[in-house]
Amino acid sequence: MEQRVLARLKCLTLPEGARIVVGFSGGSDSLALAAVLARLAPVAAVQVSLFHVDHGLRPESSEDAAQCGRLAAQLGLQFTAVRLPPDLQRRHPSVGLEEAARRERYVALAREADRAGAALVAVAHHREDQAETVLLHLLRGAGLKGASGMAELTRLAVPWWEITSDATVFETNLWRPLLEEPRAIVRGYTLQTGLTPVEDASNAETRFRRNRLRHEVLPLLQTIIPGADAALARYARIAREEDVLLNDLAERTLRGVVRDEGTLDGRALSDEALPIQRRVVQLWLEGIAPGMEFALDRVDAILAAAHNRQGDRRIEVGENLTVYVTGDRLSARIERIAAGNADEEKT
Image 1 (tube, rainbow, N blue to C red):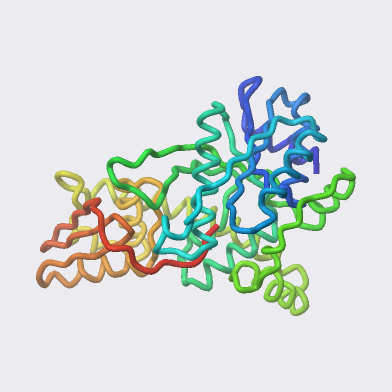
Image 2: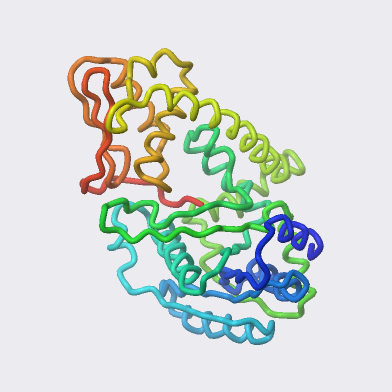
């Protein structure tokens, strides 16, 4: 596994002395990643530091943070921890607790990367995590982009959910070097280190959909079709490759249907095949609200309004973004709107 991670690291062609900040929960997976990168740092001429986010959601979270610090010391790595302020859910009223925690975790990681001048933020997602992500997106009825799951390297802008003009946006490179590694290999490596990972009891709670997929659905799928997790990860890779092709086609089409002040010509767009129409609208919205992701049903609602051409329509597509359809013209505006319901979690 060390050699595979080293090969992936070399493909990134980082400058000598580049810093990598590792999102470090202290669990078995992030401990394996931290240990691998600690071993590789002198060979690859990079600096590695660990960053722990204490969400403050469990009574023992402070002790977990302290244990993470002790693990970092044993690995010989720099360590930083932050504790999130209380009332996590109040700050994100439109989503569930797990998604709210994920949002603030990534903000904290991106801020730390910015402060440290890091080239990368590394996280320990592995093959089974990819399989769970693909299943979650498929069960939500996602399109090809959602079915692509997670990429090894992603340019991430946070906050992706807050696109008001006064929001401070941090951009960072999110790296998942273990994404093609089976969980058994990752956790086997952790055992070889002789270090004891931090155990988070909430990972076993099946009230969260991702945990239920992990503990109930994927094991059942494995009994029906051995290697189901690997097949789902392979499907994500194929979908990602085809998604790139669709994106290229849509980008060419987008250039031909954009009009004055960044509006879209709905009549010209309607001449294209439906998959191209959907992707053009997604790309157009992403240009207005970089980093934000848009549910397929919202994109379809925009297209339905554009095809209808009967009166003006207003479609809310995000927490702060509204699309207006006026005749043949589509425009979008960033504005504060009432928070609606959203999915509980998303990786």
